[in-house]
Image (cartoon, rainbow, N blue to C red):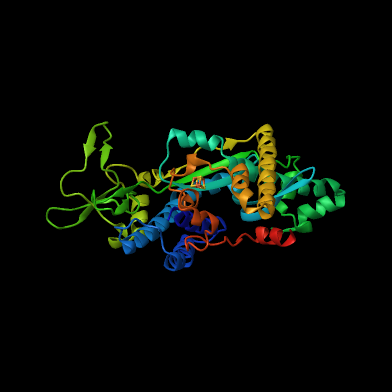
Length: 404
Ligand code: SF4
């Protein structure tokens, strides 16, 4: 479920970053991505859960996060940056003697800061919640290092081409009024290179969309709902039945700093069955709710830390460590193809050690049956019916596999 929500959210944001309207982004994420996948593959749920409820709740969550992003996050982003690339697939090539690593990357976005012409990799994530621990983790995020390294490798190639141009070609490259102009290199790169800016990425801009916690509701029922005010706010009908009030926080402080709680008569509602997600997000964007200014509830569901800067030493270290790690994996795979049945288990243990820190957190690992279940799962996972061979779905991966 988490993977599906993340994938669909990304699909919607991808179209927003490419300039589509919010209605198109929601349509792509919910109707094109979510429903066909949810219907064909289903979701892994606890036994007492109401599948139909969960499906509609997840569809509402994806829609709410996309509408919230379009309303609260995107305008700020576009004020400071130009989005020059979105979800670009590429392969970084890292080499040591005797081993080449083709490293696939797909950066959510590449941002050009309007004032400084500095470049930033955009990294979007959906998360349950946000804490200091997450902030610290983001500073050491490997994905930010790997993506930056792959993008910089390409920028370096482009820079060499720019440096090789004589003044006639430089003028031609700068004058072509196309997004993809001279020699297949986009004009923004030439404009930037002509100022003497180096072909480097300054840092990573991370953005988190918070889904909220899944809580058992009612307690002991075995059914779970998301505690996210963008889809499950509180509602109270006024005593005379003349209208409704909505709230996005159960506990809150007023402007004098006094603590309050919603009183009797307030109940959680599924907003997709009430006024609808679209109207609710518009309402939160334009109305004061519980005495808080418009946008407060939307702002609470997105965490936008300042950019994290990556230094060259960290990236070189990542590259070297990754090459050695992948070399060991490639070697292990080759060995498994040739060893006798007797040696198979010890080869597996030597090259593919269990990383048990991740078995149950942040979510239950899907491979627990193979690692800790009956040996039959390990020796023939496909026959168990629980697993299938992964099909390469990134064009660069398909291409790279075809070559090897
Ligand atoms: S269950 Fe998952 S996380 Fe745990 S050792 Fe196996 S593959 Fe690794």
